[in-house]
Image (cartoon, rainbow, N blue to C red; front, side, top):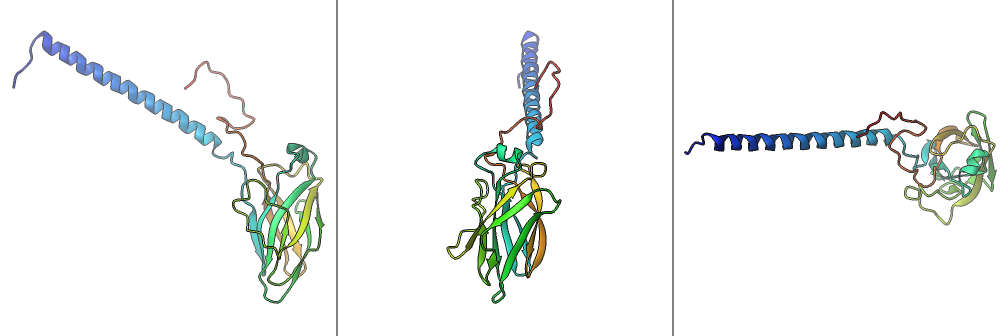
Length: 209
């Protein structure tokens, strides 16, 4: 094998050193970019709005897709505490015993829930309120023509109900008794993605990633 001496050997050494330096710089840039991106992802990971209605079982009654629907008037209705519509499906799995939805109330005492329509739930039949919101349509139970339909409206809940969070509501039934659910509040169209937590102002340190 031939060996290099003198100037040729020194030139080869400089080329190898330059290649190693370039590779190290590229690796450092890649790691820095990845770290920056990871930070942004973690900051927004907890900002997803509630998209599925809650569920519960009370005796033979199955509550499904219980939620507060995002109103057509948008944030104005939330600022005024309503009116806001609820959507849910209650199925009576009993083969021979009927039941009745007596009331729905705020567990913390704030706000008022009004039920419009007959609330009897015959054996093996269902009771449906409202229409699932935009973010709930993919998970909602399919509609049955034999279902009884009612309208449930929330008012006076300005200090309690917030888009994307939940509100505790108590369902009271004539036969099955009562149950309290943390009911998701539909946030409407997906909120814009942000690179920092909402309401937090970052200081300018004169640099960036």
